[in-house]
Image 1 (cartoon, one colour):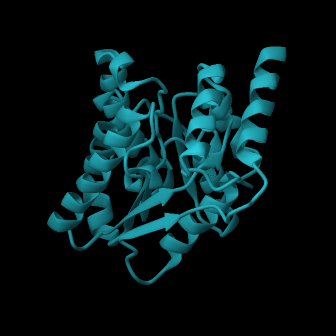
Image 2 (cartoon, helix red, strand yellow):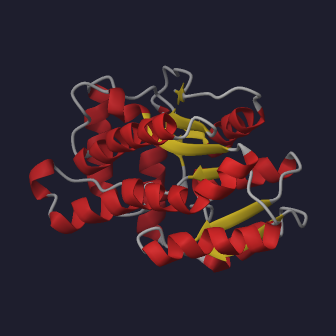
Length: 253
C-alpha cells in the first residue's frame, strides 16, 4: 500500500487489514505510518518510500517482501494536486506532479512485477473522474494530465502482462486532509467556479467509501479494469461548506 500515511491510502490500508490482509504501508512520513500500525492489530508493517526516488521505489518492495514473505497486490495511492491557472504552472510543478502521479507508479509496479506474476496478483491505481470532465476543471491542468497519463499507463501494463489484474479507480471528490494544504483561498475560489460549472456533486465522499471499493476489487475473482466512483448528489452545497470550514481551520491554526 503506497501512499498510506493519510487520506484514502491510509483508509484503504486499514480496510484491507480489517479483512485479514497483511499490509505493508509505504510513505515518506514513517512516523504517521507507525501511528497507523497501532490500528492494524499486527497485520501491517511500515516502510519508508519516496516515489520520486527510483531507488526508494525498489527498496520499498524489497523490504515488504522480506517482511511479509510474498506479494498478492499493489495499491498505489499517491496523488499530488497543485492548484493554479495553467499559465502559472512552472516546470517544477509539472515535474513534481508527473514524477509522483505517473513515473513513481510505473517504477513501483516494475519492482512488484516478478512477485505479482508469481502470485497472479492485482495492481490498483487511483485515478480521478476529473479526466472525464470536458473541458478539464480550471486550475488543475498538471493533475488532470497526469491522471489521464496514468490511465493509459495502466492499460499499457495490462496489455503486456495479462496474468496480473490491473485496475484504475477513478474517484470523485473525496474528503481528506489534503484539502487544507496549499493556498486555501485559491482553492475556495476554484471550488466556487467548479460548483457554478456543474462539476461538483454537492458533497465530498469519505475516504472509507473509496477504501471499501479497493477491498471489493482485490477480493473479486475477476479483474475490474476501471471503476468510477462519484458522490451521491446532495442538493445542499456541502462541498463549499467543507472547503470553507477547512479554510477557517487552517487560518486559526
